[in-house]
Length: 243
Ligand SMILES: [Zn+2]
Ligand SMILES: [Zn+2]
Ligand SMILES: [Zn+2]
Image (cartoon, rainbow, N blue to C red; front, top):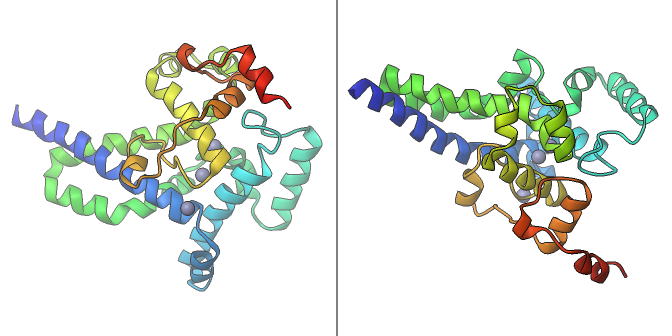
């Protein structure tokens, strides 16, 4: 019984800590401002690691793909080829292999996602003991599962997501968690400096959580993303919106 409680508290406390630090690290590493980037560029190998993850996420995933809209990675085959060639020239071919930041990719990339959380997470596990640590491992795996397997579905219209998903993925895609996360992530791409979490919750602590406006709902609806019936905008609103 006490073992079960230790594992459970590992899951809960681990989730709490990880979602708060995920939001912060996504904000300050993956979307680092010019000052922080200058600092890291002077820090040698460790610094170029950080700089590369910023490039992969902020530059490539946010601004050099999904330019047309949130659910279209490339406008054309030519656009993809041009980006791949440019990344190759810059010595960043790995980014193309990781679906241009849409997936985690390899084990090396897994490290890139989790390293900012290692120091305090290790301390937490040291404090909690082995059963606690076992539980605390689950949110880390869930986070990486989201980043690798669920993130591509956040960039699809809902019908396409349901159509392409494996039977294993379907229950998750129908869950409230996914439906909320899809809107949350849409707003992250639209406004960038909000809604950093895949592990929902941490953005609230940093006061960086943003909810959709009526205009946002109209946009998501037009892209075929899931919008709850009570938030669906009627065609009258659409008429008012068009000048
Ligand atoms: Zn981002
Ligand atoms: Zn994304
Ligand atoms: Zn910011």
